[in-house]
Length: 137
View 1 (cartoon, helix red, strand yellow):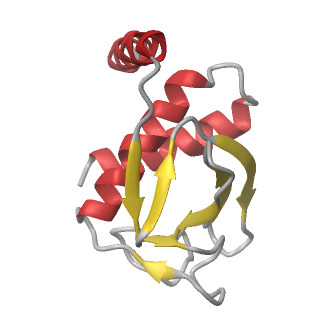
View 2 (cartoon, rainbow, N blue to C red; view 1 turned 90 degrees about the horizontal axis):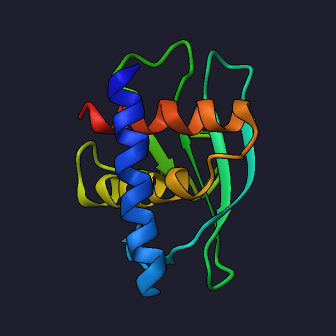
């Protein structure tokens, strides 16, 4: 609990320092340039055992989606798929575990999390779970 509080405090300080200087963060995930700040559009929990799909948009109006595979029949480690809200959906592209795309996703999710502490608790919990999964890799 203390570790989580320290993380949130540190992320908030970093966010405020970036916001004060007007710095935007741009990363590339699966060849898509994504620029903060981000807007969370939807978080979907699937009935397949635990897949979570996320729809977001960036400051340039680019819509993107990704999911963390939680299907019952899939063994850990849970993989991230970009371009869809479910791994079986057309356009879903698996990100390499611990690859640069995953690292970039983690980076922008942490920024979003620091900027959006007033988001619905359910959405925060799911984003936090994805962040923790990516941090453990």
